[in-house]
Image (tube, rainbow, N blue to C red; front, side, top):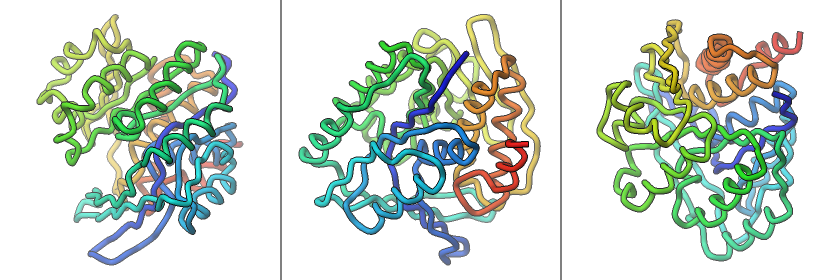
Length: 303
């Protein structure tokens, strides 16, 4: 599979990470954003389709993309919108609990976003990574949904990270159709057992795949430190998760996605090799407070 570019479609935030209620680090983030930046650091040609305020945080976000090899040309800046902020509180296991502060999209934001990205052409040799609430938000869906359908029609390869958070359960009646449409558009769907417990009140892997098998061809099901399962029409493969002493789990799943895509772009054909690379990227980011792969991993990848 000869893929030339990865396009991320998602939101951006400034992540402020706390340990013992004290701020440790502030870094640009967002689920898809974290994946794209790590891929950019690894030398993969990338672009990020997103929005940011016309404020200082928006400047930081765009500069961070550029500094890490990601094109910021498709970041829609709006002077009338404040950039989003996320507070990530690490518990005793270094797992993060989040509080989000968002200036929700206005009609003007959507119009600007649609106009800016009308110039954006997705090609058959592109990979499109998308997910989280940004991809299902009813306010943004007319524009994001159009981009995804255009990508699918163009023959691009789509990777959907469900990444559905508990605080959005109240929105399920309004977004379930968008979630399931995303699954039908994607070549690979990645979700956690926790995601599907919120969506369908299911925690058994076989039951989860039975519920979504008519929507997606390949499902990568993660479950924290428990084994990873990859479901496909021809059966299920299970992969052990190697234990690791974590510093922070912020960005763990995002970098799993990035590592999987990187492995595919490097021509690794078998699923075991792709999952191994995905875990390598995820473990790397768990060893630090930050959202992206380390300089050490970047050096190793480029050897």
